[in-house]
Amino acid sequence: MKSFTTLALLMYCYVFSFAQGTLFGHVLSADETPLPGATIQLLEINRATISDADGFFRFDKIEEGTYQLQIDYLGYSPFVKTIHIQAATERDFTLAQTELEIEEVLIYGNWADEQTPMSFTNFKKEDIETKNLGQDVPYLLRWSPSVVVTSDAGTGIGYTGIRIRGTDPSRINVTINGIPLNDSESQSSFWVDLPDFLSSTESVQIQRGVGSSTNGAAAFGGTINLNTAKLSNTAYATVASSIGSFNTQKYNVSLGSGLLENNLSFDARLSKISSDGYINRASSDLKSYFVSAAYVGDKASLRFNVFSGHEITYQAWNGVPAQYIDDDELRKTNTAGTEKSGEPHDNEVDDYTQTHYQIHYNQELAKNANLNIAFHYTKGLGFFEQYKAAQDLVDYNLTPDAGIETTDLIRRRWLDNDFYGTVFSLNVNPSSKMRATLGGGWNKYLGQHFGEVIWARFMSSGEQGQRYYDNDAQKTDFNIFAKMNYQLSPQLNTYLDLQYRSVDYTFLGFDNDGKNLTQN
Image 1 (cartoon, rainbow, N blue to C red):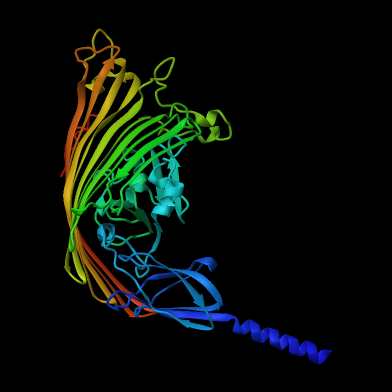
Image 2 (image 1 turned 180 degrees about the vertical axis):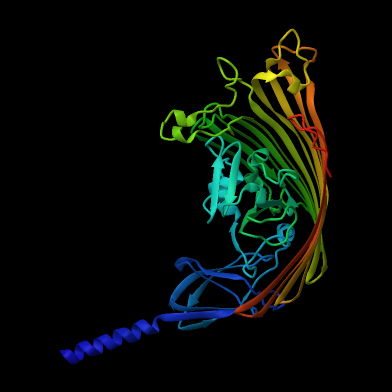
């Protein structure tokens, strides 16, 4: 009996060990060039690995059986195949280069990958669609490590903020298709100006910490890159809506022509979002559109994007006192507009429109080199309105009269700005182990700030709409960068990133407190 038990145990161990399989091989292009850094996944068991400099990959200790294998590589179509793994299975896989590569070209010079020495997270279209409920971009990123988001209205709609590793938005660089989004003066990004932008976004990457050289302001705390350029092979049309708490509603219509016989493609989206907000009176009325036209040739592509957003949000940026947080009603307190006696001022709103124009051109110079050039222009115009009580007349260029030195008034503070420029990147892959990028940009910002008194209980000698401050700002930003990635061995990779930047900022006029801030 003892001998039988021992024999049975040995047979079991032998069968068990024999049932463990290995899968190894190479990931190659159509001309049998190794593809380093490709992601290979066995979907059923959630196992993944990365190909090395020779395109080689290996899975060990895999139970024999049939699996769904998926391979992803930048610039190539996703590869999915059902394979059977036995004791030692060797397979080489050939990937097809993406015929419609506009989206890959636009992100190439700005995005990080597995061979870049920085922490990053990518969001694909599928990730975006499952989380896109009409909230701003920061709410998509809030589940990423080291990310904290805020919302003035408490719903993620309207004014939102984001911090990466504790760094405020003025130190987080944001690009859309490689074009800088950050405001040229405050350096912050105002997501409320682009409502429902995620519905036109193909992919997002967030880089934590000091990021790679890129177009726009220096990124000390992080980088957020958005890519909209996705070409659809077939025509489509969708109508979507969602309804949530606090009377939150989102509606959008999207349609596209697909790739036509003349190599042209057209896409469009129209959206409307509204919400009462969690905070008292923190309502939002947001509208946006996105239009894109593209031409794709054998070795060149041209894309024209126009997208715009108009927001009217009741101000809720004053915050809530800490002692109110534990009270279900007081925690909704909004002090905006309450300087007016009786009911709060009903038009204490922020009203702003921002429209973006982008032209992207890509040319394949050689098999391993391409050039991407983009031109852009952004127009912004809007104001925020405030009811102010007991204001000194002299602060608004109004003359005291008959002993009256103060008055209640309604003021509007305007911003009229223009931002335009060009960015470029030259991408070269001389070998499977080396990749280099030379890029840069030139951008010009023109901003006019002015304030108006649109009503006063005592106007003195002034007129309705009188300006009480007016100033102009100009900013010119030039940068050029070079990046190189070289893989010395499967375990050792070198990365070089150099950047030169020149900024000229001129401010002429008086601020809203009447101080002369002329500077250069």
